[in-house]
Length: 353
Image 1 (cartoon, rainbow, N blue to C red):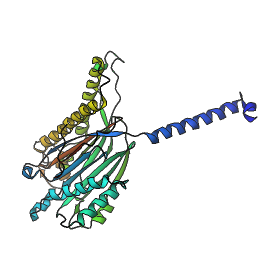
Image 2: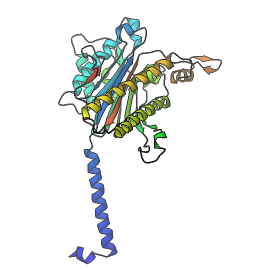
Image 3: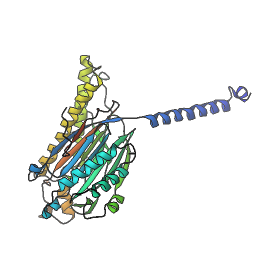
Image 4: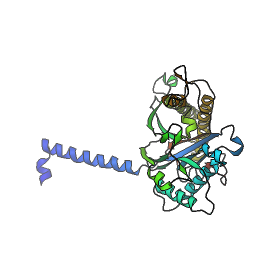
């Protein structure tokens, strides 16, 4: 037979090698297609001090069961018309959360359209306007939809030495690097794209940015309203992420050294959830400090580009006091964290674990 004749010849070896390579590539491609990660979330909110009595105008949820999160920033300008835009943003996210739990849900933008249609066709639709950013981990991919000036980063830990590889390994600091950033949608300075009660929602939805990002275990998803990204530069947020990565690495090393590597999965996930809440809080507090500080911020530079806020030819210092909402997620090989939903939606109480 042909295989017998070619055995041992250069052509035979090349053919066999080629077949093996193709089979290997197909094997790894198939493995990648079947990879399915989950995401553990943490959240934090600091309302605008003048809006704290009504919980601010930002809305958010992070649903472990649906592996989905969203941030909606109620547009503050509506207050001049006596409208609390927070009611609008929360209502929109309640409808979206309902949509992503429907059996027919397969696409975030379609679910957002469905949420919008239900809200607008309700008996008493709210007045107001809101930006919206939503994301969902599906398999090994993060799907994102954005309308307006909220933002999301995907940050990846760089591999460091494992404890024991080198006697100096405990002194090694792991760093994180930015692998994805969304872009703001603005009509003009400080006026974002938005869904609103006096605009054509279908037209605005047709302008939504959609992204798909490949993710892997250990990746950090950092989403927030413009109260975060107006006040913190990307490298500042990545620096905070590096601190979180090092904390987790140190705790893992201590667990291994103490013989607790076989910690029950749900207990480990619960512990990671608390760490992520603390990480989200650190990001929110850093943004809050910058908003009230005297350093240059993304907002002060953007204002300068628009000819606003100059003083002596230089950008004015300081940030923008605003609602600050942070949702962070860590991509994990572990199973989803049950049915835990963190939110500030009126009929869904935040879950404290």
